Length: 319
Ligand code: PEP
Ligand code: MG
Image (cartoon, rainbow, N blue to C red; front, side):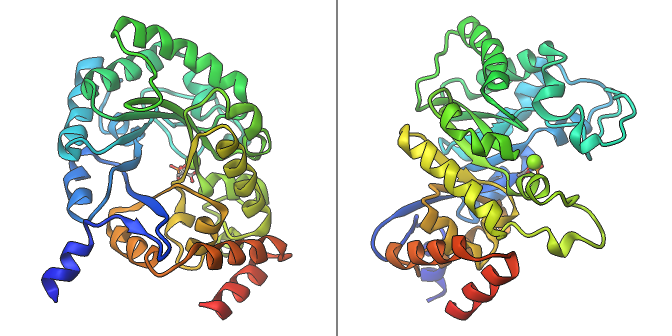
């Protein structure tokens, strides 16, 4: 029995009626990719590359980055790596990239808007990632994109690098997508979807910006709930826009490992969930217990609730 339970980790997550959801791992350190695989992760769904940058005293050069990304890609052994480009600013400082004092850093220079002020940083990161992958499955994603203009500005840099490296976005082995973590990009997902290869929904920031609650606020954090129906409606818009254009959608925020949220995300049509490595077996196991009709019904009911609390009560009564 123990051997059987162990094997189940490496089986895909499939609902009772045969719908596959990819379950991947969030990673801050490329050295942990092997551990994620051993727990059954089907890939890395979010590599937070800022930790790599924070562990150096100066901006790491292309060779240094390439070596570190290769560690993850080698451990993944052909499974996809979704690598997020440098996401600093806001609550994530980088000692050697001093930022101006801002009254509201969460609403200031951070994510892709900061990266675009120093295009060479993005160039080097794209170069290092493409070289490290060397034809293995690589999905690069841009953080904190608010609209298609920002995506295109970053993609122009990407396209130059890809050409230099003799690679093309083929919609398969090499993909370029965006995180959906600002309400504007969820509302405008239909205008982003034709241009991108995929979306990954960052529910931590999406919840923060939708509910206007600081994600780390000591007193308000309990109210900062990704199951709020306003957040769920933004997820619904995102998934529908992506699928209308044949693109896949993941969720890589905390909500992806919330026990009650799982049937809702499934019912909304999410294709991939990326969670901390130790949550991978639980998420896979739970997915195997659902069927789509039941999940769609739970999603439909959740969207109709007025508050996060009502959503949780409703889902708890069903589980
Ligand atoms: C998110 O915002 O949900 C996310 C996954 O990114 P991070 O938590 O790194 O900001
Ligand atoms: Mg985020």
